[in-house]
Image (tube, rainbow over all chains, first blue to last red; front, side, top):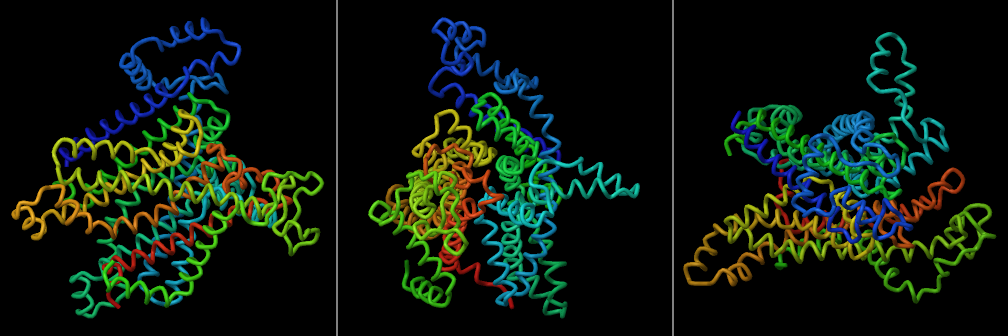
Amino acid sequence: MLRYIVRRALNIIIVLFGMTLFVFLLLHLAPGSPVYRLVGELGTAADIAELERQFGLDQPLPVQYLRFITDAVQGDLGTSVIYRTSASSLLFDRLPATIELTLTATFITILVAVPIGILMSIRRGTWVEHLGTLVTISGVSIPSFWLGIMLIIIFSVELGWFATSGKGPPLTDGIVLLFYGEPQSLLETARRLALPAVTLSAFQMAFLSRLTRSSILEELGQNYVLAARARGLPRFLVITKHALRNALLPILTVFGLELGSLIGGAVITEGVFAWPGVGQLIFQAVSGRDYPLAQAGILIVGTFVVLTSFLVDLTYGLVDPRIRYS
Amino acid sequence: MSGRELDKARRLFSESRVLQACVTFLLLVVALAIAAPLLPILDPTAQDLSRVLRPPFWMAGATSEHPFGTDYLGRDLLSRMIWGSRVSLTVGVGAVAVAALIGVPLGIIAPYVGGRADELIMRSFDVILSIPNLLIAIAVLLALGASLPVLILVLGLRSTVWYARTLRAKVLSVREEQYVKAARAAGLGPVRIMAQHILPNTIAPIIVLSTIYIGLMIVVESGLSFLGLTKVQISWGFMVAESREYIATSWWTAAFPGLCIYLTVVSVNILGDFVRDVFDPRLQAGFE
């Protein structure tokens, strides 16, 4: 197991290295000097040269890259043009809100998608499967920004059940207060969290249901399932206890990879719901052309994705010894 | 396509009303997009501030001139939706074409040749896949400036990875087949083996992947248009973004263009499921 962890860790170092190189090159190979945006329209050639010297932009590219990396490792990802403060501290302040949103979305996804997938595989060829197919194919096809706006129109504007935007008190506070007999805080949190969480999870929910269905169906063709059925075990038990357990591994693998797109999707969802997270900050940075902030955001989200997939990988290693040794 | 697959396609198509409806809808969208300049519709950019936010035909206050209503500048929504389809279709098809043109040769040659280059390519794929699709596109559009060709290239190049990965698995298994070994023993060169024996085996996954990816690319493009990153004047995603402030009073301005995206992508995905069912009998198996 230790060798497996070390090998995976080396791999993510290579990936992180590649990612910083990608973002760095994009920033530096782009047409026009980055300081143009700092000096604005009125800057003279001398101003630009002076700023380039200050920022070390007159140095050769490899030297600049080395500085970029050493700064990044120390948590310095540049300065936001809009907010005029450190990009990394801005982003880290927003991280808890994004984690709250994505974890809730993941929770909803798993809670809804796995049962739907099982149901679709049990009830093949019936209206249950047809309905499930329709719902899941809609889920993977619907653009999240539009789904979010439609949910706001229906549930906030027309019915008034949920808030249109913003974030309530932290979810963890709400849960703690619930045990002290004060559900108000949790209700307020839910009133604001429900719509963005559902919007963000829609694609994953549909995707995971389809995946669960097809992996279970694949397992159902295996001999051990036929043997269990031949011994007279009820079909429901064979599916939940035998097939699901073996189907879980491919489900985990693909879902682990998909977590990245969940975090990426947060950019749009948080923008639509004015959810004060990393995604909304990137959304603002993009629309306000705040390049340093946008780039820092992409680096942090990318690192987050890489670390998540590392954790998912380690989990497989624990669940399935075959993976460790391959 | 073999005769058996053709028979199966014909049977599945005639059985499913939903599929027929989707194909009809897609043909209609493509036809309207191509014929947009010739159609007797209003100018999609003509503003009329005396007729802003008019509702669609079944609601009170509608005018026959604007069957789907008007937006906040009084522009005709129907005409804008027809013109907007051009961006989505161009990006969807364009990005998939880029991905296939680069991904297919890469996915066949790299694993067949193997060695250091193959290893390096797989490693760089890991890097590319670690950054979410949307964020790569945002980063590149910000750095290189927003334009449709850049967008098509970015989305296409990123999807190249999936083509190469999918084909790689196929190539590695086909390479060990008896008939490939026989061809090699008979003295055929690697180029002929790849072109004549390996490529035909990869046609089915290429078609399946391409259909699914057209839908995915349209969704990503609409998201970027919504963020205002594609710099196109008329697109479905941007139309939704423009009407965001008016949803409390005029829901249709956001609902209709989004519905266009949704219906188009659903149709493409249902078509994709059909194509996969035709080519991949394994997914039909299972016990009952």
